[in-house]
Amino acid sequence: MLTLSIGGTTAKITKFTDDGYERIFATTGNTEYSIAGTPIDTGTTHQPKMIWTISAFLNINNWQKIQEIYHAQDILRRQMSVNYRITLLDAIQEVVEPAPRTRALIPGTFEATSGNSVIYYSQFNVRMLEPKSKKTQSQSYPYIFTCTLKELDTRNP
Image (cartoon, rainbow, N blue to C red; front, side, top):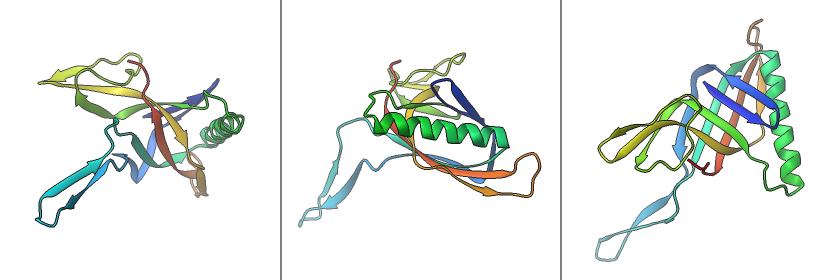
């Protein structure tokens, strides 16, 4: 389940299309080669941020909440507010990274360790790019919602 919230508005996404959830790292570098053929890796020294591509079935209530969240974020961003972040709780895919963890845990969950790595379900600060919807014939889930979420910064563990 994904939970999005800003201010007092929260939406829960539970029913995804067949290819409706993807979380990847933003491009963090490239490999080029010298004239001699030696690999030269380039990229940021900062922690890579994540990007989500979401496609899910929503009922009317959740589609309205998604729109409220998007508009609240956009108003705060346009007002140059420092806190226009949407809180995303990603209980679908765990974060695996070298210890110590860099993001906050989802309330009620715990981190596990494996070697020098920590594994946990995390909270993220994200920005939602314009959400889109397509009407379906379903009475229970009359909307297919798509959007992209981009991580802004890490939450304090």
